[in-house]
Image: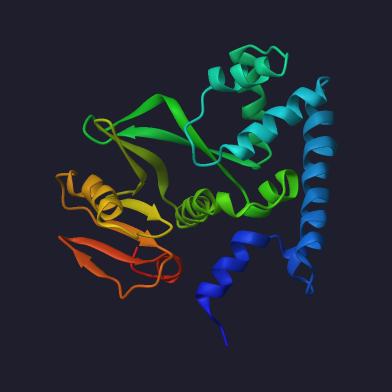
Length: 246
């Protein structure tokens, strides 16, 4: 029997590459297969095609980007990280490498959007992966990354449905996603769980501060009945992914 909640949990761990679902592989087998796909994309395609000589430098940038999925990214923060490892790289080179990774569709850039000013911002964007298993095949599996990978799944689904997806900025607050398609717009917060009044206030409060009538969602993984809070619809992430209403 199909259980969307179990399937979502499996997808977060194993990803969606067709090759890993041809038979029942172990988790280690899956990551070995995905690592081969990753190596083929990076070394056979990207390195050779772009004639990259500093492969070790590229790999460190990849690992940093994979480890910072769902967090604001800046070339300066990456340069600082590499400097701590006694390696130097300028900001232009960082973004050159990132652009090459985008060209292979391993990484997707998600820019920031000023909700009040209604304009795309040029700094502090985020990056998401083409598949959750890419992260785990390179960095190893960690349950600490679940929240980030839930965001990743929602981001990919919005792209699949034809939305232009951005990270919302509202004063000092952040809206996980502002998704726009023609005259349609969605505001989305992704929460692994809401276990306290403080967390509920934080997640719902950001959306309540947006003064327009476009649909607003808080998506969750914890068990609850769902419903509507002051016009904000709350529902399980798995149900949202299967929904036809947006």
